[in-house]
Image 1 (spheres, rainbow, N blue to C red):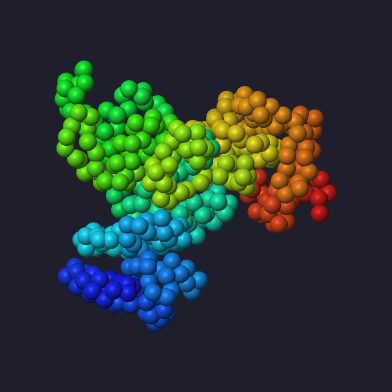
Image 2 (cartoon, one colour):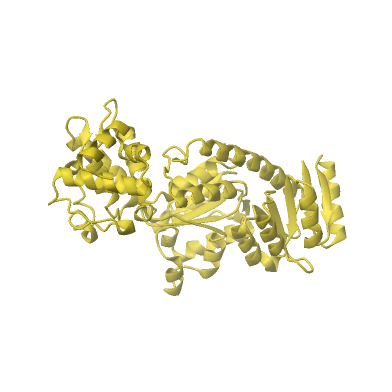
Length: 456
């Protein structure tokens, strides 16, 4: 392993280099951003240690130049206490991790080895993903898709998993926030450690402190034994705090201390207990609005929002609906192998999905009950029970990309089928083989239908 150390202070470069040498890690040094880029142009390094504050070209600029020049070495930023906001910005710009001065050289060595290992694993994952251009596997449930949003999400997860950075996941209900949190943990070096999921909104306020932080024997009536909280039980793994916006203000203060000090005190206790778990939180609320309303702490928000992932609603990635629907069909169909007709796919693609991916799965499960003769038709797709805002979703379909609207109630099956073929051909740039695959039919079938409907 060979590392480039970029710092304008010679004693820091040398001390880091000497320690890494004792660990069997080779290194080179650069005193400025300009000198570093010259090194990187001549030689490939397994990782880069980059000081945020450099004379002349800043660490942030060096990072940006590395990306422009296609230099793929993963970067650990080092910063002073007052520069944490800048370090967070560097993470968003592509750095993989950061350490605050003064730091333990042993911790740096651990981070470097983890970083290099995960970079190698990331390259393997990306190579595997290229073998199937339509699907990006994410954990057990698979967030399928060929949309830019899903590909960007997979790339973000690979970057985040390599470090122990705190993550905030935002998005509407049903977009898969816990799935993404679990996948970050699955790709991390600590994937064998526990993943503890907590629904903040589902815990009674009076029990929340004990559940999260534990309690000592006798700390309150009924506390007959010492209890470890969920933070302790997560060990060196990951704790996922869903619906973080619902956390009461007194508990927000305790959580802030955990994030600041990486330690907690059990209810009724006096000893500080170290916390090593990664913290991932999630919300479907606008936390900035909650801050203005005085119900969420601004300092806690910034501690949680070190790296943010915003999950798009399903209606903003309609090109993924067909793949997702077929996945859920295979998941719930059992031994039978029903198919989605073109009309059913078209109806799904034109629905707004206020409940997102979770709602799509429910719709497919229900359609399996209604369907006959191993075919799920548009009339088997029940969209009536989900939202007052979408009660007209079937009647007037709002087509993307200026595609014509059709009425699912007044059109004949032939008209729906014809429009489905036109839409598929349009989305596949006229490629009939891809259009057939998109609709779940053979190429011969779509050629016959094109001839039948006189489509050019």
